[in-house]
Length: 140
Image (cartoon, helix red, strand yellow):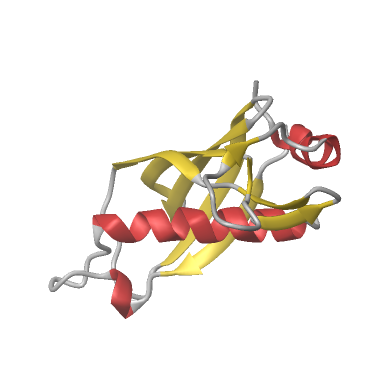
């Protein structure tokens, strides 16, 4: 199963007073790698098809921490897909620094039609062309 790997440097804004990456900074890190992954596939987190715009709101996000990292450390973040459902996708993230485990995380997003004139989001099946591009990265 192929995986997608990106690197990110710990920015000063990501750290606490001790210079250690703050736990809340891992969620934007995972999201930015997801966006880079989608762009790598020629996709976007905000897309459009013949019926209009759709996107991927999150319904779950988790992160477990193994080791601290500090300002200016370079992280390697590997993304894979643990579940590709009819309407949702669950990403797995493995964060490392110098091949040392830092954190593992997951995010589940649901494919939703964006309303063009107010109203609630509506879940929708993942378009076949999108699912086809995602499928090679599935571990299930």
